[in-house]
Every structure is written in structure tokens, then in C-alpha cells.
Image 1 (cartoon, one colour):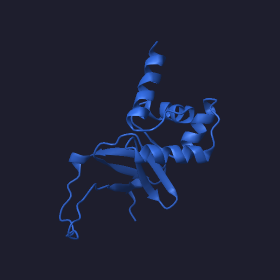
Image 2 (cartoon, helix red, strand yellow):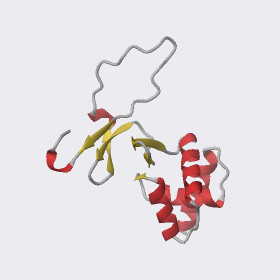
Image 3 (cartoon, one colour):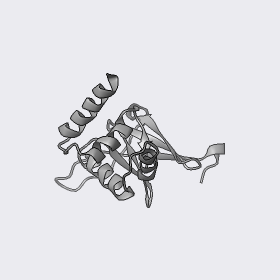
Image 4 (tube, one colour):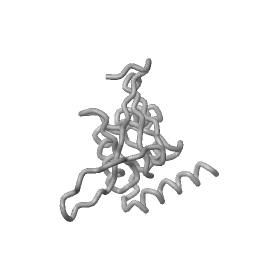
Length: 142
């Protein structure tokens, strides 16, 4: 019974975002949104889907993640060139990125104070500020 309710919630989430609830989108959304907040790469999601017996191409995973991001269901975090994570928590917050393990952790928006910002061009406004604090184990800095 609970599994059917979760499937209905996932279908409604995808529909409300303005996307057609295809089998691929629903399967990937189920993996993404059924377990609480998470940070995941396309490769990790692809491996999870294969592990669950859902055969989907890596290209489809990337396309779906970008569709979900455009629809406001995910935030994309680029931590290095060629390495992006997708965050299911779309509220205002920042991140700690552990360079040694590749782990991302949420940092409350309230715990980061942003000081003087540069003057913006006329007519421009800030839509969002993303801060990724990079840390290394062992306390070394660089």
C-alpha cells in the first residue's frame, strides 16, 4: 500500500514540474526522491538504476537530470570541470565539498555570512549565490 502511495507522489511530482511522467523519468525520480535529501552524480544514479534492474542509458540519465534541474526539482552543483552533482534539496543553502572523498554536505544558509558584493550592471539582479567550501581531511589547506 505504501509503495503505491510513493509511486503516486513521484508521478504527481513529475507532472507538477511540467514533465510527462515517462517510465524512465518515474524510475529515476523514484531513486532520487524516495530517500530524502541527497547529492548524486549521473554516474552514481546510473549505477543505482542498473542495480535496481532498470536498464537505462547514461545519456538518458544525464538528460533526465538536466530536465529535472530545468524544472526546478534539482540543483546542479559543478564542483570541478567535468564533475557535477545533483542536489535534491532546492532550498537556499550552501555546501561543504570533501575533496578526498567527493562527499558533499549541506551547510545552512544562515551559517554563512556574505559581505560586500560587487556592484551589478544596471538592470541585473542576483538570482542565487552558491558557495562550495572545499575541505581536505587532515586539516591541510592549499
